[in-house]
Image (cartoon, rainbow over all chains, first blue to last red; front, side, top):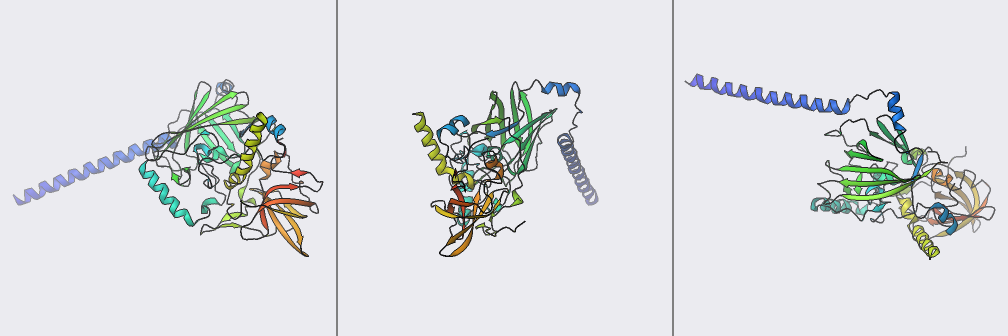
Length: 306
Length: 127
């Protein structure tokens, strides 16, 4: 009797172990399959027809810069000594956009919309906490040439260039010499993306509008000052031409853990056919740094004669 | 009416100018609420990213001090009429800056007068 019961218990334990193992194996297999689908998506070799099909898409070619203020002709005529059309305030959160950021409003805060994010109680508490922590800090220690990531990188006073190739849109961004890779070959978004400065992006064409879906943001990026993304954040950008040399980008940020309403902003970019994208190595001569205690430092050492 | 709108717009931009620069790196060491004007001779001009630096030898009360004045990037400025030759060693120039809070001989460029007497701002003319 006693021995039978022991055997019975052992059998139950064994069955449980096998079940647990099966579940684990299944989970691992499924996860591996999902990772395989995302990371090992096979990029189809483009055909002549794929290249030809690009000609039917809107012309995004060339170098674009976020437009500020009035049209350039008016700017030149109206006030020759005025500061550059780029001196617009960085957004509603004054006196401290995140590093390189201007992400006070979504997408860099240089577009219309904005008005500050509507935060969940938890996100508002976190914002206050981060703000308090930063009270004795002149600037973020991360200010030392780190790029802002999304969405701030899309609102810098530097141009960007759009490259359309079969299955992909590449945005070459002059500021901090950054690149965004947007896959338009039908691959899915990863279910559990690694956090990245620019997230992971896929795109599709809805008529003449390029719709880009991005997930997975680095903790070093922010929706707005002191408002980090949660893992549930998603950014949808709609790129379209509104006239031959003007591009509109509507940016919508959703994050159920952080925002009580989607953050929508719109900005427009102007095409400069006579511009090229230039080199930008931030570490070349960055004399504006922040030390480990958060104190802003300016290096006034006279450069060596060359 | 239209003119008044642009004047107001540019005034707003001027006031916001420093805020825009803050977005790049740290500018907390500069006092953005005051201006100082210096006159001197260009020692050298660093046409570098992320920002340009013009070094000016300024003589005050018989003592020469070299000031470092920070400006926007060559990328930004080259599209608005500036070049690596905008300031040449030996040029006599006047610069208005937002000075360092701690009194060090440094500042952020606001506007200037070139060796040939022409005024210069970050805007210049867009290319």
